[in-house]
Amino acid sequence: MNRENFRILIVEDDQSFLTLLTKILQAEGYTVKGFLDPQEALKNIESYGPNLIISDLKMPKLDGVTLLSMVKEKNKDIDFILITAFATIETAVSAMKEGASDYLTKPFQDPDQLRLIVRKIFEKQKLIEENILLKSELLKEMPPVELIFAGMDEIFQDIKSVAPLDTTVILYGETGTGKTLIAKIIHHLSSRKGPFIEVNCAAIPETLLESELFGYEKGAFTGAISQKKGKFEIANEGTIFLDEISEMSLSLQAKLLKVVQEKTFERLGSLSTLRTNARIISATNRDLKELVQKKMFREDLYYRLNVFPIYIPPLRTRKSHIPEIAEYLVNRISARLGKTKCNISKKTLERLINYSWPGNIRELENVLERSIITSKSTEIDIPEYILIDNFSDLSLSDTFEISGNMKSIEKKAIVNALKKTSGNRRKAAEILGISLRALQYKIKEYNIKDL
Image (cartoon, rainbow, N blue to C red; front, side):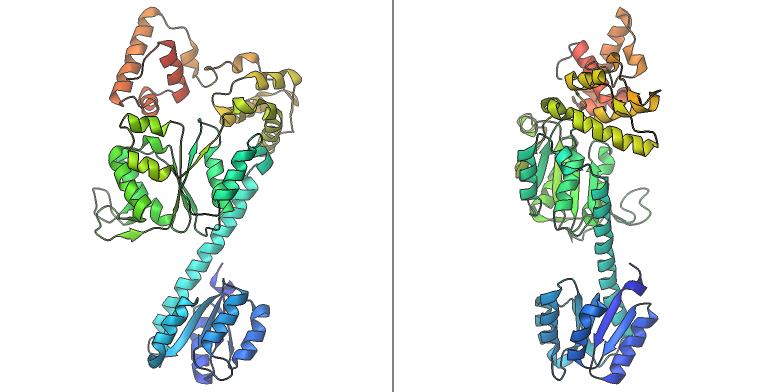
């Protein structure tokens, strides 16, 4: 939305004041239409389609509050500004409770006040429009609902029930089961007008995660050369998705608890308290209750986040739906790569069904994409060696046989990394420069117990 597309309708029975308001707002680039008669204005509202109505409070035939009520009854999305004399400010404030966005007083002294109020309403509506567009784009990118929730009818019903509410949701599921996609679907099915903001708590260093979530003021720390809004501030009126919540430190969990309980927070380096109406959806591939027992996750935060848990089953428990999921992915990947649509050979389909998919749908998508790229024909034939449990995600160097001495060195390196990260496998994998699945494979191979 640009200013030219932002339509303002002014209702004012004083011709000179109507002309003044019209000129000021037209000079700002808005499209403006004025009426002296409120009943005439009312007849033109539907055809003109205003984003904003500015109306005098006291007018013959129809007063501003009645006009406000009649407009809001038909379209709640139209913003409304009342113009009032000083003696009737109390009436204007009362009208705001009925849906007016703001009010202006006359005699009119400061045109900047009008410009500022209208600009704020314009920016708000522009943001709403952008988020509606983002939601529609998001919907286009999503696989069909019946495909996402194939074999998960109960879960889909739960999601439809909770999505329109403000209830805090937590998604439990293995890596690659589609937790992020489901969080986006919940946001899409909600009536929230703010954005969907994703934060991967495992991907951001602990020292940076706090400032990422809550923002900071200029000079809050070395390198803070300007103010920065945090994700909770940006996600206001929308949804914030905290992925891998179990990787958050205990100290930061305490600060998150305050946001969950009170909907308030402070930027780093600031004493001012900010509010957020962001809905919180979190996700984890670990058992939070077990982490609570091990004192690795705050019990009070656990109960605050665990209001509406949704457990997403792994792909291996939905084997009968693998053929349709694979076919959809092949079509989407082929279109994205600009390649002719491939078919999956019968032998390959059997292999896909019989494989346990430790990396779930994400792994299935990766295997299919790799096969489409390397395929020399229109039929996908995935070699059996690719679909071997605990193998497909390992790097080439990890697949070589390691002599006894090298094995000892490798085991020691893994143990040291796990000790250094207090048993956090994801962080240990980053230190070692290997994938998480490769690390899990090595832990199992060397029979390394939890530290």
